[in-house]
Length: 169
Image (cartoon, rainbow, N blue to C red; front, top):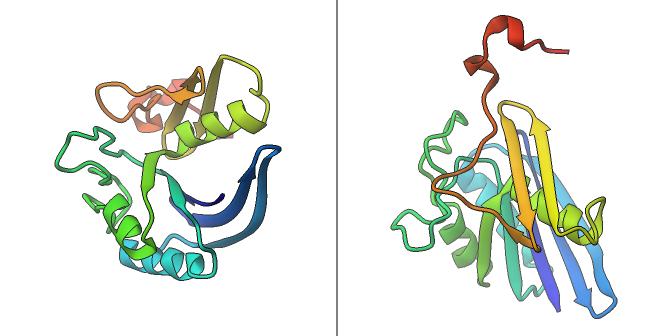
């Protein structure tokens, strides 16, 4: 089965197509472009996937995200410092433009799932992925499933730390 993936970061977006077989997953192609404006990103991703007849799409994105499937704003980026992306419905336009079922999770949960399935966490029941960027991102995978809480999880923000407790290196 041919599947697609999108990793949407603050500065770049990576789209990829992969074949899933009994032997594993084989990446066939990928493309990278600057994040830019949300409508432009959706168009570029949709154009990319026209060359690949994917059956499903996974999207891992910066946040905060509304990941509650029973919410009216499920699939939206919430109040983010990324200008132009505030309250943008990310999942809906991807599903509409690409025309396949899509799932959304945080970029760090996507990384934790990937590490658990194919990387350093392979064979482990619990995988934690931590990254330091604009904030301190924490993704957790337990038994191959991402951990979700009440809201979009985050480890912290440097500006919230005491100045002496945080140094940029």
